[in-house]
Image 1 (cartoon, each protein chain N blue to C red):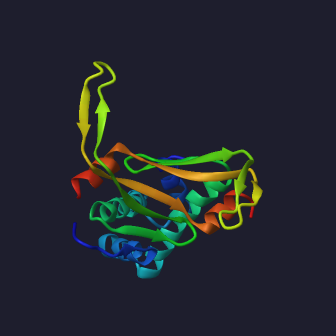
Image 2 (tube, rainbow over the protein chains, first blue to last red; image 1 turned 90 degrees about the vertical axis):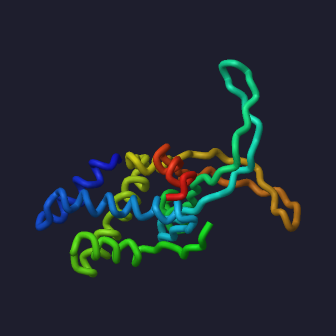
Amino acid sequence: MIRSELIQKLADENSDMKPEEVEKIVDIFFNQITQRLAEGGRVELRGFGAFSTRERAPRKGRNPRTGESVDVPAKRVPYFKAGKEMHARLNNG
Amino acid sequence: MRSVGTLTRADLADTVNQQVGLSRADSAQMVESILGHMTDAMENGENVKISGFGTFLLRDKGERIGRNPKTGVEVPITPRRVLTFRASQMMKDRIIAGN
């Protein structure tokens, strides 16, 4: 399923709403999640899963083309953990 | 890094309510429907790809031998389907930039 298919499904079951409005809601939904992670917070969606961020230590990397050593700085990366209910549903539980 | 709270379904519904003007009940229903459709797709074995956000990827893992860390007893870990998330470059960049 891709973003446009999700919007189509929502638009189909909300025929009273304009498709643009449905699209705006989907944008708000995903944008708010990213926004909260960028602010350093976490997102908990019971039954679905939780988004958070994790610290990555600085490390020495290598330019794969030249073999040159480069410093990769410390950074924060997004992390998702599926909820128990989600795991159960994926495993016919 | 300033400390911010945890975002929940209720917060997402509030933002939809404020920014779209949909009723609170309908906003909450839309949030639920978004999650429901994604979950249904994944339950049917489909990956979910949201451009600009990321991809929810299903992975099938075979049986392997695990160990009860308390007792040291070996136990088989049954084959299972796990869900991983690969963030889009846009999300990664926004998190590094902090906005």
